[in-house]
Length: 99
Image (cartoon, rainbow, N blue to C red; front, side, top):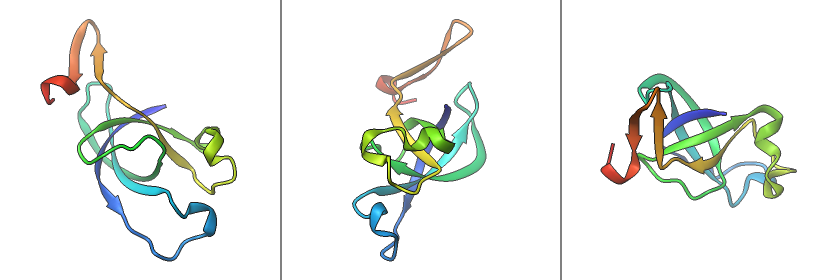
């Protein structure tokens, strides 16, 4: 699993049928201290994430483990929206505080 911040969306009107109905989001990978890495991925959103939210991503075969994605051709999926991150006893991200 990896951390990322949703930076935008990818719109594609021409795509395989199995991707229809899924939102594709542009995600910047984050370090464990919630700092951006400038490494971007396109991910299938399974949880209703929005721009600016910190999310948990899974890649590879794990990206298709959600029941709704078993037949979807994806290599990266968003599986959770993060509420907070604690690193070495310090809160480095807290959604409630707007970090």
